[in-house]
Image (cartoon, rainbow, N blue to C red; front, side, top):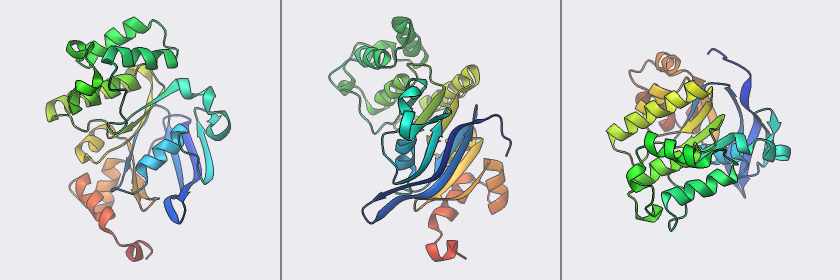
Length: 251
């Protein structure tokens, strides 16, 4: 796997325990600048917890995290304005309109020329017709697009996405993926995302990390993983890894 630059994300021995439950079990992650990397795994594999630790929202039980050259456990506020996050499972304030939400988050991130940035995102993500509607009155698909707009309000260098096209119809999901690809290319941005959509992963990701029971059990480009497992699709690879029993994995 080619390394296209210094690591934007560098995590070592990253672990998170909740009592006797080990959600993430001492993983190493490195994502190069300009790459699009994917975290794959079944429900409860540790993907969302990993993203939350990388964002600084969850304090690790063990390990170290460096993002954009800074120690996230000590100096995360030095880089938070250079990154952003989107998840369809994290609601924006429902009583605020789309525009009001984007104004609030734009001000939090110190976005310059905020009105123009909002207009641009509304046009790019086809939100102009709902820009002054309350978020709580939108369909789930529209709320997903608003969440993506929020994640891009500060033109981040690092974008962390959890199920970026959840609730979108196939056509809308396709052009959102195209938009994310174009954003990464035009801004030199780095993207790390979690997804259950294998077609999305094959299209977007240059680096795939397969998680099971809080551990990274395999890693490679989509083509490398297909060749290694002798499968025709990444979904087949995912199913083989997800269904492997713990005693089989140890052999």
